[in-house]
Amino acid sequence: MPNQTVVSEIILVGFPDLPDTFHGLVSTIMFFAYMISLTANGTVIVLVSLNEHLHQPMYLIIANLAASDLLFDTVTLPKSIAGYWFGASTIPLNVCILQMFLVHYFGSLDSYLLMLMAADRYVAICYPLPYTSLITNKVVTISCAICWTIFATSTNAAVAVLASRIPLCGANKLNSLFCVHTAYSLLACTDISSSKRAVFVCALVVLLLPLGLILLSYIKIIAAILLTRSECLRKAFYTCVTHLLVIALYYTPRLFVYIVNNIPSVVIKSDMSTLLLFLYSFVPHMANPIIYFLRNKEIKQTLRRILNRSKFRVKHLLF
Image 1: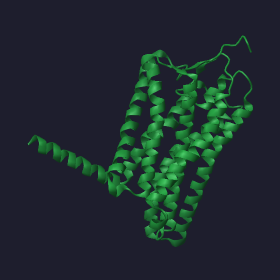
Image 2: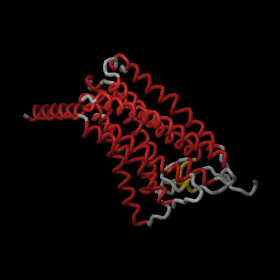
Image 3: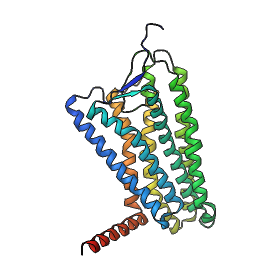
Image 4: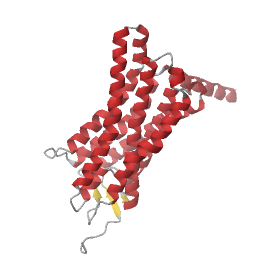
């Protein structure tokens, strides 16, 4: 194809049909979203890391989830904000592919970490006596490490490789806030149906396999509570409400978008698609640590102790 222009960089358009008068508002919302995520998730990581009584399996998984969310936001939001504030909306093609890998990597990592949370709750409620010997800090640390290094890497490396082989013949404007395969594949100048199907299968594996195991664990938890009718088990299940809320925030919009994007008769406008991407990518990252703070007594107590110590030190220095 000698007459075609070789694409060396991608332009991240963001919201393509958004009037210029709203650019300041949208970029400010993204900035505050990043600040909230940075503060909330960073606080969770610091609290769990520095307080030994929070060195428990569930809190270690929560800290890993917070780190994943924070890194996801860091590789996406600053570039999107810079595009609106400084006009720095271009990104080299190879960096776009790298960002795409990281976006899908951290997105799928969240899915696997939520699966680990469900496994922890399942053993804690259905097998309370051997829980402390089955679910140890060492077991959780190794499990999280496997999720970071093997599970999240394997499928998303394939997505990045498939994306790098998509031929681009001149069009380089990506109607998205950051590089994702769904938007990137629209720039292809040849038929890439087989590549899109392969990526769709990878996405379903990442979403449906952990979701299936999560649902199975909670079905067994509910069955155990109904069979025993134990008040202790009911109180233990109450602690799972937080986890169920996080699961709903993560899986519901993603499944909706993936399914709709693969129905030929349904066409989502670019701005609506970008808005959905923003909502299901960043709202859970801001909400997750806040949900844990509001519903977790130990984390709130730890935060109060740290704040009280800080106030005491300040008073001591002043007086």
